[in-house]
Image (cartoon, rainbow, N blue to C red; front, top):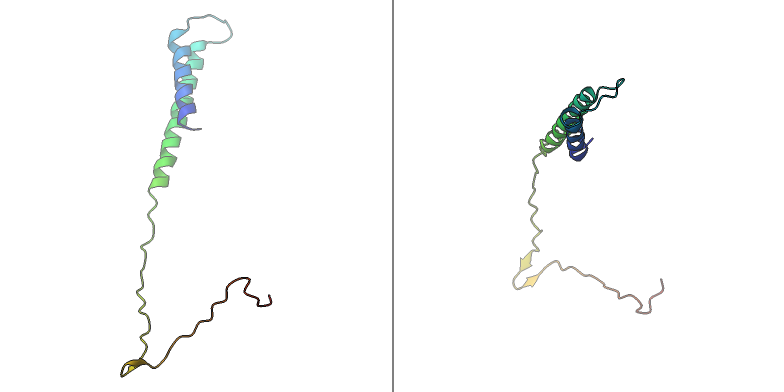
Length: 96
């Protein structure tokens, strides 16, 4: 229902139950007011319950794994294994 609608029902029910003194004969406005207040209170409690249950969810622990980069073997002053990458720019004349 939502908090706003629940508070509206509670307020409307309080107005019917306590502020209006009318005799309709077939409809007792005091009873209507109490029913509206109880419905608003029930809606407010269920809304708050679902909000609290949604906040209690605990995430699983995150596992972190450290990966070391492979080290290239060095002989003297030069690297034995070198990586070669070819970078092509778009529109450089190569067929698609």
